[in-house]
Length: 71
Image 1 (cartoon, one colour):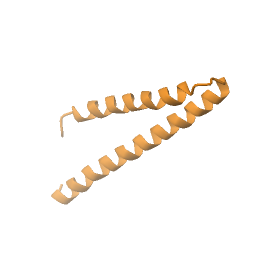
Image 2: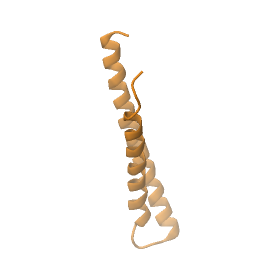
Image 3: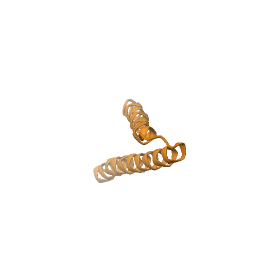
């Protein structure tokens, strides 16, 4: 692999990670809002908790991925 290919592979990896985080957070917020509306609670508990849970899971996956040795 050439240096340019390695550089673009790394950039695409981080772009994909950012896109994954954005989609995961948007789905968590949307799902939390729908569930809060369906349950009828006054405080939007699931709208707060689901995105936080999504962030914790994605950070755990990120740490796991960075601890893998490079091939």
